[in-house]
Image (cartoon, rainbow, N blue to C red; front, top):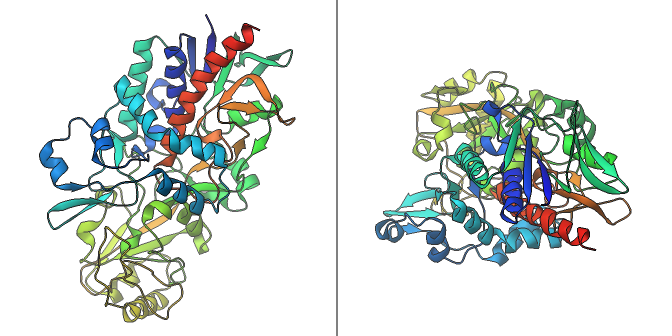
Length: 491
């Protein structure tokens, strides 16, 4: 029987383990974290997964619990493959590898259906990705489905499935190096043990939790960013593969980074999960320490800007900003604005509010907000579920959509900094999830999935694509690590 070792503990690793076991392999999953902190970055996510679909039929295939009444009152829209391709292209400045992007998009729905077939439950992202208008829930931004129970529910479900299929799981098991013999990967080395295998799948994340690597590759100041997720993603898999001759690839100076609560801890906390994020900024404005706006908050749906605006916040004086809203939009703010552990101030006037913004030039902040109010063109109606074209005029930066004057008290402001999710640089991997060497050839017995796959994301990414990418390439890696290894053994 083929023996496969999977290094990692999140969505990508578990899909790889399940895929390999499904093909008849003996599978050992090495999770660096202890049991209580298992699950990698996946456990800290909201569980949203982007996939291509034409309409309600695909939604019902993933959410069979949907009632006819729920379907009738919901506008799920569609998200065809062409739209997914366009979003991957424009968010990455058209640098995404077309072969890898094609694999991700073309197999997105089938992979989620495969997960559902094994017992993963999904539900529509009501509230997070829809707005109620005229008695109907209207979804927007191409992101519709999340795992039941969010990231934690997804991880727990996948661990249950893996255990039921007979995957051997070891916690607190940090792989240190690959065992390479005669040009083929034959296992992994831990601190005091070498474990033999026919093939190895690396699915243990990027280097976002390694402050030294962040400063080295992302640039000065990135060591100051807070980490949204696990503390265990320090680049081990990337380092081990490079030492074995793998080629590096992708946007090593780029990452997924978001607006994150100013006083959040240095690493993610499981009892809060992803709720330190603050993603309703398209409904308001953001001010830096100088009291000035610094991005177009309404440039696009938050799905297509949030992963790069964390970096913009990090580049501001003091590495922080304040998001400002008025009472008109307060009911539309996402649930994360209502948690107990939140950095928030409120006031009945803009003058009073700006005086409460810690670290901000209050005089300039008030001037900026008043200037913004005067610049709003009110001709276009406000529509939070569409790019409504309600914009500002003659100010820089502009606000291209959802521009409402801040004129209805009480006013609220939320303090945010930069929270890094994952890094974009990684390993050269082909569409069969094989890791490619510096000579351009596959390294025998070595596969990869998840955040350490280089070449998929550059500069930015469409929200919900990370978990889908992990699942697609995880399943592929598990299949390849079994079938391709068997083929080489039979030669």
